[in-house]
Length: 325
Figure 1: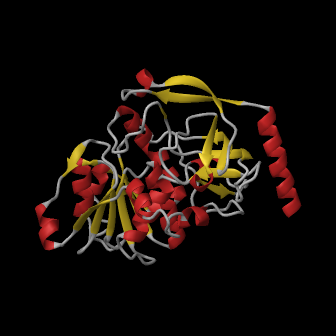
Figure 2 (figure 1 turned 180 degrees about the horizontal axis):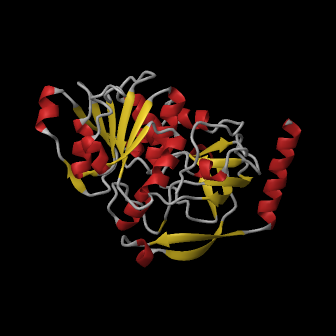
Figure 3 (figure 1 turned 45 degrees about the horizontal axis):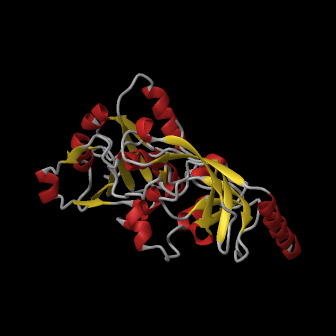
């Protein structure tokens, strides 16, 4: 086993000296709308040195934060020229002579944000990558470090939930929302999702319920629903908001005494309005969560990617599937 890994590393190093890699990347040199500022650029990559790893990108998603970063509306400001994208799954092509933990053929995902993943090939540092099993689907691996991680941390860090408790969220069909439903099902927690009405609402509700949602209601239905007053479900102790505006206010109205509303997005670009009654008489709390900040503050913590290690197990049978359209 050791000999095989050693030989593969030698072969990879020989390969890198014999061939040069030209990467095709979506780059931008100024902020603006992606369709206006992104350009497809070809660059010859240097051979990996020391602790560097050359990888081939197999799949890379497009997240709202990626678009906002290009637009200049996100707190993270990359240096120009910049490559778009934060997530991916990649295959190791070859490694530098001081790399010990990686070898050619392995699948890896980025540990850090802002690496630029909308490219065919890239050279990253060894400590910026995490190995994942090849049995894990490309969609699951490529989307594992932002949305499922956000869902996991929000479920773990704000309220101590027990089986039978209830969580409510708007934007329930978002990538984070889908991950919340799946984790709640795995942990025995009721998950109530709120979505915007649409022509194919029945199909959307069925899809989310298959993922693990206990109840899926439209924004109009939640206003008149009695699922909590009737005792069908416990009142939520935890709520997630990625929309803002009236939707966030409606979600907070259903929280139990001492409940917490966590805002992690604002797709409507409307401010979160705090209703006076629940704030005073229920003592509910409003918190915010940003995965990038959490990762920086917990960079060396073993908790940082405990969800990735659990959900992307070697057998490929993790708790969270990739986002459904």
